[in-house]
Length: 175
Image (cartoon, rainbow, N blue to C red; front, side):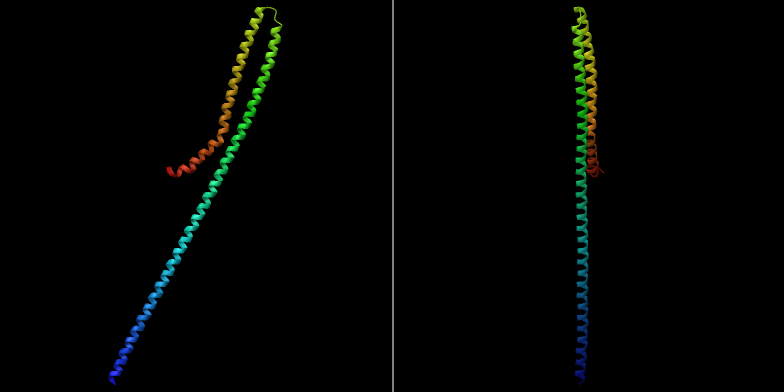
């Protein structure tokens, strides 16, 4: 009977040991699963946050590109308006010059028809040629300055946008 109690105690001790090992294994598995779930959740959260950051950056870049494009179109429209107004002013100046020249030529012709001597005709014609030449030089200089100013004024909005483009897109690479 002593052997039976001893065997029973040994079995009980072995059972307790096995139960303790099973409990420890169960706890290890639960801890492992919990750690895996925690790591998976953190990984998912990081991936979601990264995806959201990338989507936000893409949206921001798209908005910047759209705004940049719109501002470029606005600059081209402004440049075209400046050029159109300048051409209109140039055309008005040219037409006024042509009308004045025609009127001056008619007046000179009438004067020339009224001369009495060939010497008077030569002198008048020489004076008219000199006056016409001086007027032509003055008017072409004025119109040349006008077209130079028009070219500079009409290119200014496009040039400003080109500078913005260089600062926006080239600056990150230079720094």
